[in-house]
Length: 573
Image: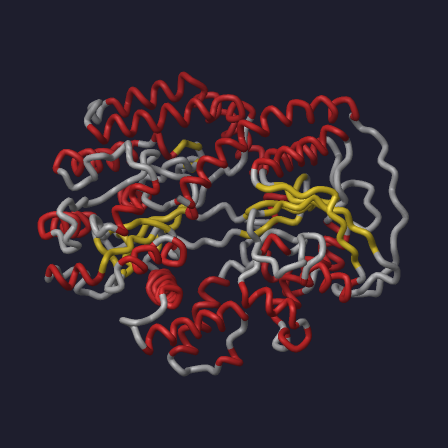
């Protein structure tokens, strides 16, 4: 349900923000180039971690979740992370507003429209950041970053080769601190390993954890014919009705893993060798991918109820032993496949990548930025945002004595209190952090390093879970099974593909939102989804893909392509 909910929220927020930003635009147009009064600066000690000599009040807009797992008595405004900040830097967090999901987006838009921005707040979308910068509402953070960002924080951003900070840079000036979004490709194909053994099916003789589309088809056929789950109603491959997604985190039960083998990257803007941009869902390669899915549907390999099953329905197929194939990000054992293990103690999943005939796994880079933190123009100490980043993403994560120095912070990490509890509710990690952390876990489990040498508290917790599982695989707790499967199968696959240089990377040309996208994306998305479902189920022929492309262009796609091209050309110039 997680990815389906994310998809729905994205669509809902887009519609909501369009209405809210209309009001905001009226105010921003009225304010024009108004003069902003600069508040008197509060003095601080030198350096990235220099504390303020007097308590600095920082009003914030806080994006919350329903259950952050706070200990009794703690709140978003007063918790281990905010107390850590107060004690360490003498910064007092005061929440101007707190809201969850779409309510937060609405609150941000209303505060913009009212001309009452908090001192610091999170911005979820690039188009809203564009609006704030264009209307001179947020502080220039260039000097603050250069002067106060710690060497480690700078190394984090440098690891993205500019792809992250560039998205928050306007005319050479850094106007926000972006969250990072490292590449976690590919969309993993998790397959019931116990079923492979039960059916006697031998795949991946090379042991490289890569299978072809034909091998995937063979697995699905075998599971259908032999029904190793004993359900009496087996299903081969099940896809969600929206079929394709635009980001890695939402790739659960989606066609993306198979589509990429054909060179198809749906919902992504790419550029050809001549610099001409195109929308991946309209490329000829997408037609090939849909043709394969349609072929599977006709042969009964694809779920006969495709187009009508919800995310929960497909999860139930896995849990009930009707299907043993699941697509998604590496971490689905932690929050999805754990349900299968809970109902079926014998269940074991192996992680595979779908590769082409040359053994290459085709993937796109993720959007390197995931959310932004901004400071309102006129705030006395804009550098406080950079110092908070230093505190939470350098000092805290790299401390070898966190449990002794900040015991309640260490307890938060151990107990899994949600990251939104931090005033900086973004994730800021090095591009290599996923594999760096896994290296610690693998080497510690293998006895190559000690637990004290493992760098992060989370990785130490994973080591304990993996060791618990290995000590008793059949009787292990579900949580320990999930941590073992997601890391020693899921991330191990990513490490293998990286080490063996089997990834074939594509870099998207554009991540923003154009003017016509704001008004036409919803209807174009519906056109795309309905057309793809009709083609796969045979309601329309494969050649109807060409009709879809023509309709997409006529209904705003052609104009959007022109706007994207202009944006890409403008950035290059």
